[in-house]
Image 1 (cartoon, rainbow, N blue to C red):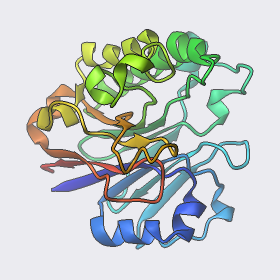
Image 2: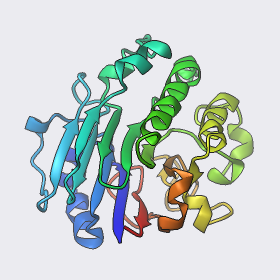
Image 3: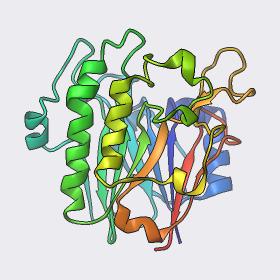
Image 4: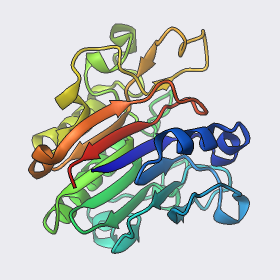
Length: 266
């Protein structure tokens, strides 16, 4: 069995300083870990690694964004960012916030039986000022990249996709319609993955609402479980029979997100 965990840690140094990272490793001991929002470069990090091989892909901007891979099985290859051809085809370029290709957002790793893609999708922003980049450029480019990799091997994509796909994926859907994370455009972007044949693995094992991976810091939202499911494992349909479980782990603290996991029969 292979266990893969994904966690938006909202700053690796803070999670380590809280002791939450150490607790996570001791309790879960994943085979592979994909992190988002590491918010640090490698020379800024002192972190217990427990013999994991690591690949850090930070943002160029200090203290911002960034993803990382920690793995026990050695990857055959690791690729940072989108290929240039996809960047050009889908015009994934800078906006008023900067260039998403310099923000450490996509890390693809090739293993014997699959590609693993770790993603931290750009946030649409409260005023939706990054929604156009997200809808017209990023989501189509990301789907194209997954389909390109899938031509070689099945794909497992995970991370913070910054969207609640359906009303079951957030505690208060009605007042959030049209707001960041629950706009028609963002939801359509996620639906495009499903329409292309990728599977929202969590929904194979769990139906209904109440399952969330992110909570606001306000109004005691996490304790009341008033949250959003915006962290996902989406997988090629050819891997469906390999899936053992897909779970969310709200009892693991340290970030405003909690870890999510996928276990496969490899």
